[in-house]
Amino acid sequence: MIISQDKILMKKVINGDTNAFEVLMLKYRAVSISYANKFLKDYYEAEDIVQESFAKIYIRRNDYCFDKSFKAYLFTIIKNKSIDCIRKKQGLLKINIKDVFLNYDIEDPLDVITNNESYKELLELLNILKPVHRTIFVMYEVEGFSYKEIAQITEQSLAQIKVSIYRSRKKLLKIRED
Image (cartoon, rainbow, N blue to C red):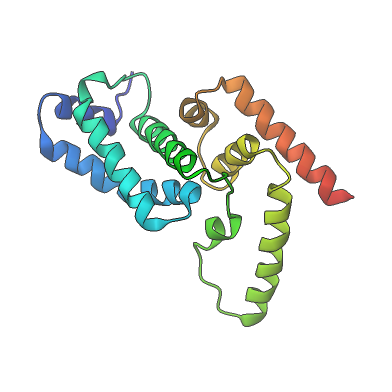
């Protein structure tokens, strides 16, 4: 069995190595903020949630389960803290797919117009999906999480994740064809 670098670092963290924890924080900080921001739509609030999540992991480091990848463990905590934050604000979970896809530069102004229309269309299509299915679909198709990681983060079975993604694709294709 191959032990991941993250798990080796977590073993060191459990043994009191603060430098190992700093390595994990630096490795996952940016992607964690981006992930939290997709829920919260507020970069500064996302930073706070990520900071709280890392603090929780450090404080409860002895509770870490080595069966789960560190990234999945971290993202589960971030997801739960983000949902709690949203509930407190009485907001609804909406993923702005435009923010998700703005990770690349477009030089040609015609491409910007074309892509903005694509964003609007894609956002409208994704908003047809139930929030849970939309989140899972975006995690798989956009974020590149594996089925297993999504199952761990959302605390659903692997079969539920596969069915959710399949049904989401099928629904989006059907709507697109009509």
